[in-house]
Image 1 (cartoon, rainbow, N blue to C red):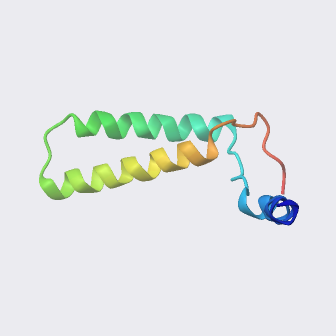
Image 2: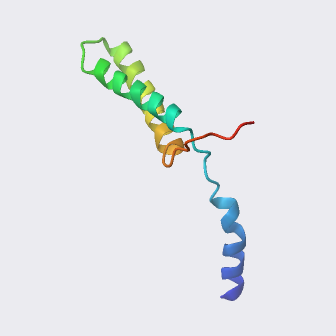
Length: 78
């Protein structure tokens, strides 16, 4: 039992790698783009254009979910 627990704790840092967080300004820009896409989706469009808009919306929502949980005020300088 202890061996299993030790092995699980040893692998835990490898499993839970956090995604880097974007700056507040980047998150606000992404959110503004998301709102604009939602606005466009409420307008008339054909099937091809609608599918493209929905794909862009899904991608933006994934970015926001992954990188804007706790946006940083001042991003690190590389």
